[in-house]
Length: 322
Image (cartoon, rainbow, N blue to C red):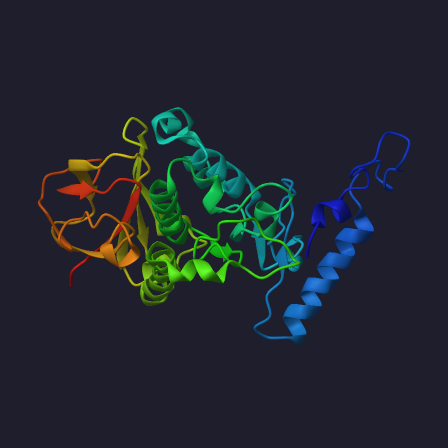
């Protein structure tokens, strides 16, 4: 449902004198609230498996709370704050990103206040905003590397992924309803690489319970290091209800980090489940030859650690070898 905020507030886009308060003297549209609650309760009762999603741009509480607990009853809500902050961070040149590090970490402060969708929607690629690829700084290689790294980070972040058509292969021009997408770009290996990455992100996501079984539970996420702004590195653990774990490490600087010491939840062999900089995706091919060996040396508040190579503008997913 688009524009939910315009329904919830009597004074939405109205000047003083253009609206009347509700019976309690407030600005909440009580009739609209009752309608949305009835709508969602009816849909979920009569259509098993249906999902309703709210595009709601304010901090109205309980958008995804069940109606019997006083919420609006939506299944999900667009995380507009995450979208705005993430794109704002990425549009900075890598050398300046260290001063905007908090834009990427702030979303975890409120990530579990609602059931969120991470929206990279049509709204971000129209009306002169350009395509998702064009928002990335640097030459074409760096733009594509930024895009791949961000998509891998996005798929590992708590919340469900929404990616508007074209971004999955690096559409160059912004979207226009009057013409088709730039399918010809798939004649180029670097754009096929982005498409292959999205395919593999979906495959690994589906096969990795740590990425979704505790998606709405704070127990499913833990920062390893949220504060390495100097290196432009973010690292965290996703945990599943079956005890499985996945470590995501993103390097949003334009230089590789060799010998980077990373805290890990256990010693042993960790496998690179995904590397956004792999040759397969038209990246530089830098990585850790598929495996990382962790020792029992504590680091980053974790009981184990490993020395890893982080590719430039790249994201790694590591999973513990059984």
